[in-house]
Length: 475
Image (cartoon, rainbow, N blue to C red; front, side, top):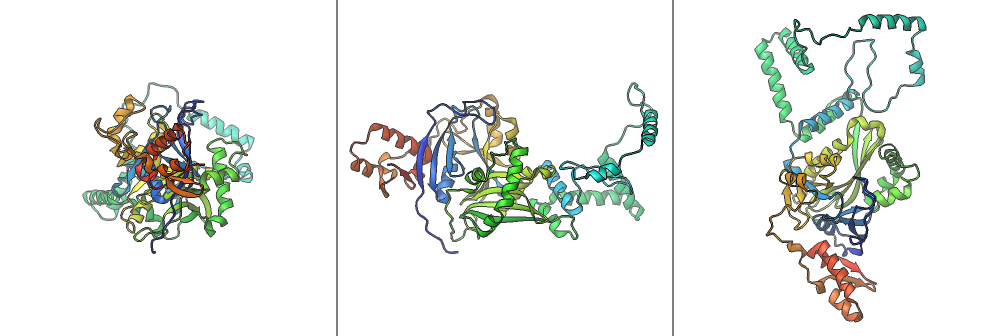
């Protein structure tokens, strides 16, 4: 598709970093979360790419930048090199558990049981009905008999395991021995069977992220079907509009059950402001991704029903994750991690069409909050230096953050080159006309020095590229 020209971004500076802070959702402090902000009426995707590379993030159309050396829980921008991503054992385990559910219908923790024995439910919602519960009740006579039997079976307290008996084997060792026994019965020697097992393990280790994610698609008669559908949210596509209500219903349940929001808080209006409104302009470029750049929702549909939604921005250099919410009934699927792995695979897929798109941005990494450190487990990942905005491997940053919540990662002699801005060249929107700040001052000779301070702070925060390209609204 041919490249389309888009107009300049328009922003309105709010500031805020000099005012008292507000409540922090991480350490629960009431007034120590400090940040500067601006309202983005519209942004090009390049504007927003440059902004997040200087520590900014968006919530709806509001863009904010934590005041890193002051705020209680410093937020470090983190990006993951998707092309060189290496899965951990836990990542593989989560995908395999998800695939097991899709292929066999088995939840985490469920195992094959002998015929006639009731299966044990894993995590997630208990779907058994009252009728099923009543059928499983025993008569009083049976209860007494079972209770007496249980008393007989209950071992008396002792000194521990019997040293004269062999130690219990691990479950994985028992499974391995069972496999080897079956293969030996088929005519293979124990050595051949062992080699076959090692070969299978080696092939499993060599599987790529995409190989693992595609396994259910290559299996016939799966118990469940998963479809991931990308829909443009700004401007709203037909599919986005059509699926708005079921998507919001999932969001409402997620916020109430997972985040304990009151029922009236995750309203349609709040959902729209937070996750649907976006300042990013729809844009297409030659050599870019076929769906173009901008803001999207990724719907995860299980058997045709939305169970999760990933809110993302597709930018010139990355896919930026905005938010993920899911149906709490499917919490057992570890959808937070699974969706992140899916989004990393999505970056790799887009890279085939758009070579400059290489990274996956997961928002902010908060080292001082243990529950937010999981973002650093996607190797290799890099943190943004809060002073000169250069990228550094997270394994080099972690020791510094163990000592201090706020830390500079770059060498002491390195400077923020993007922060050097000629004030007169900053672009202004005044009376519906674009002009430089120098022209604005000529039109408004009574402009006070305080205007210079605001424009200087704004320009330093957004950087030279954005300050000389975006339009700062001044009345």
